[in-house]
Length: 303
Image 1: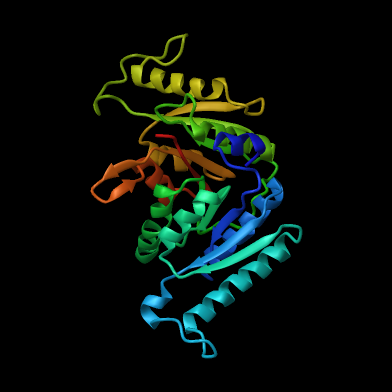
Image 2: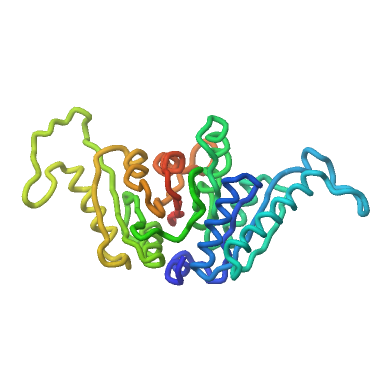
């Protein structure tokens, strides 16, 4: 995040990028990605392993006795992640911590003093989807800073290719949106175009294609409203020249992952809603986290 983005979120510029690590290959690729991001921003990196091993292994042993086996394993995990980050970006300062807590709670607390929180997503098996739901979605639903979730196929590269782009999913209230500011600043930081996308749907499923577009633009009210929202989102944003925008018919949770195929980053806002189980992400943010094949940034919007 650039200086402008950090101030937009009220965050000091010396905050670290925090990565949740657990020794898995997805979390190690997240370390690679975050190390590149830290170098790009001139920030430090904080690697955090969180697990409730004390619940399963009892109270920590007295001084002079052996440490619990999982605590030793956790220290090995963060040590390996630290070495990997140093190899990736020798100039980035790296700090580590092992926390005897549930990952969701520990990482959400870490987000209070983080520039970004980076998590790796596992594969698409049923168990992996459950893990994603229990950690990544939970953290994204409560975090105080932008959360970046990397797909299972992420190659660990944060720096964009020659034809890179940032894709912004435009929400219902783009004026003053934290997600719009974040996406625009990311396009400037990386030197790549910003593409703003808004999904729209017909009011009635069987609404006929009776009204062709006019010279002034789309004919359907829903499509015109979508175009207005996209234009509003880009009107005052500090995006690089050449920002693109488009509207696509369909559900946002289907449209956005398809539109962001191969992108450097897909950015969506998170307006948390309160349900039976506390704060939760909306269906759009959950959908793109599960299905996008590029990194997804979930940016908390002010209530």
